Length: 339
Image (cartoon, rainbow, N blue to C red; front, side):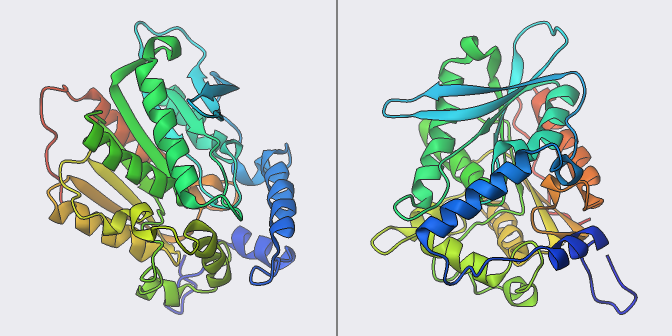
């Protein structure tokens, strides 16, 4: 949103919320304080009042929690299924919410229920482990990938068609979805598409070496202090930050066609832009779209960010196009474009 001076400003609702909410001191936050903040924030995002910001789910969609039993743990997922009968198994949309050290699948009910109803499809959103002391990003990445693999292997139990599978992720979830697409190629699991919304793509020391990081360092929905806490938790000393940084993956060729959605008032905007460029350079079909005046996390804040509705419609159309394609026909390459 342009205020007439040529400078983009976030939507008014975002600015008002930022003004009235007291942000914690991210740089001095202890492990216990982080857990307390996370739990309180996730309760807020899951509350009825929170729907004012996160939006109401679409009608005609059954939403429930389920447990996915893996070899060494259980992972909670939120399932969205069209209430009306459909002939045959439905496509699978594996979704991963954003937040990193905070966040819940509930905050994405508005968009996920719409995808379930409009495609139609079964959407499975992973309530992955959140970053904390002793829980690095690799744990969340494993949760996303292993749930995807489990549901595909048990497709009959879930009522999905494994040949029509896509992944969608937002912010940290975008990173997890991107790495799931990379692992899928390596394991022979065919994905029809991947959608990455304001994704994190680099958690190494180069993560901050982008103009958008400096330009939007004090963004109301994501700032430098939060990003530094995120990086510290995501890749603690002794871990391999490159292994959880899709932007630094050596071979990005042969991956599922990608839609990379970038809000322009986002310190991570260049993470998405550079990743789309790298996908294209590697031969993977990719489309980059930008939403002027939208802040980081805008897709889960439709009550405050008017750009969310257009992004939701765009994502659904992209997924529909690729789910409708014959699996025997290679998808056409697309040039990166900007809205």
